[in-house]
Length: 72
Image (cartoon, rainbow, N blue to C red; front, top):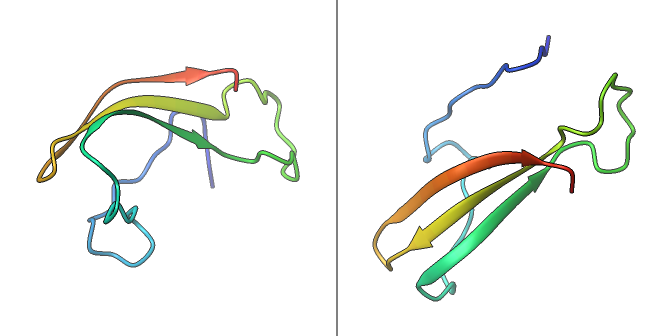
């Protein structure tokens, strides 16, 4: 089951566990991940369903930092 604070870590070479950045130019970005956006899964608190991370892409490496839960 799922519980607050629960997470899994997967290797990048597992199917569907990566993001294709082939044509993305180098630079700084904000990656936003939203879960349950249509509220199809009942939850006690929908305010913690969006995470934003600052991302720097150098062309050969990607660094994420300052990941935080936001309200959308």
